[in-house]
Image 1 (cartoon, rainbow, N blue to C red):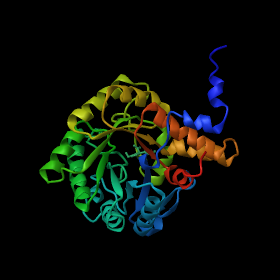
Image 2: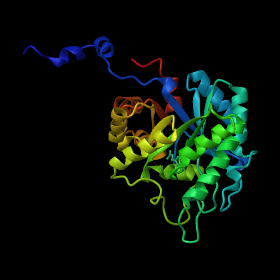
Image 3: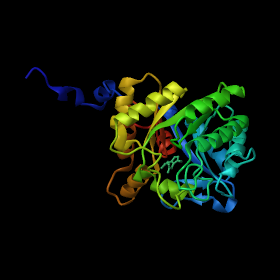
Image 4: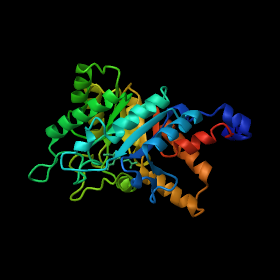
Length: 324
Ligand code: PBG
C-alpha cells in the first residue's frame, strides 16, 4: 500500500499541521436579549446559560465579550409595550436604540448589529402589519422597518440585520439609509430564513410567538433550496453587504451552495433550538460539551460560512486559547 491516509493522523502535531478549517473567534457574533422592563430580566429557562439583560447588564456583557475577543453582538429588544403597529420598535428612545448608544459609548470598537423585525413589538406576534384578512402586508411592513432602521442608525448602530423576510426590504433600507447620510451602515440580510421549528426557545426568550397562524407566508419552506438561491440573489442585487442562512445545522447544504455561487460574505445563524438541543443532551451526559460544540462550530466554517452567529460564542471564546 503506497497510500496510507492514517499516516497524517498519527499525532496531534501532524493533525493540527494539516488541519483545513478553523473557527476564528473574531468571526463569532453573540446574540443578546435586552429588556425595557427590569422585571423581565433573568435566565431563559429554555436556553440554559442565556439570560435576558437589563441595559446596564447588556453593556457589561458587551465589555466582557469584547475582552474575550467576541467583538460583535446582535441585539434583540423586549419592549415594555406592544401594539398592532409595533410602535415601540421605532421609538427613538426604545430599548434597542438606547442599548446601541450605551454599548457604543462604553466599547466604541464593538461592532453592534441590530436585528430588525417587528415580531417582538407587535401584540399579535407577527413580523409585520396584519391586514383585515389576517395576512401580513408586505409594503406597509417595509415602511415600518425603514422607520425603525433609521432610529437604529441614528443611535449609532454598525449593522442592521432585517429578519422579517418581506420582499424588497433590503432595497428600501439601503435607499433610506443612504438618503439620510448613513452610507456606512452595513446591511446583513437574513436572506434564506426558513420557517423553522428550531426557533422555539427564541420565541420564549423574545416573547414573540404569533397569537394566531404561523410565519409560513413569509419565511421560507424548509424543503426548498433553489428558492434560497433566488432570495440571496435578490438581496445581493438590492444592496445587502452580507447574506445569511438560518438556521444553521439543517441548512448547511444551502451555505455550501451559497459559498460556491456568491462572492459576498456569508453569515450563518446557529439558532436557539440548535443551541438548546445540544445543551439538553450535554446536561443529560449524552454528549461531551467541548467536543460537541467545537465540532458544530467548525462544521459551519467547513460549509463555507464567514460569520457565525451563535449562543455558544462566549463560552467558545473563553477556552479558545487552550484547545489543542
Ligand atoms: C425575529 C427573529 C427570530 C429569530 C431571529 N430573529 C424568530 C422568528 O423568526 O420566529 C430566531 C433566532 C433564534 O431562534 O435563535 N423574526
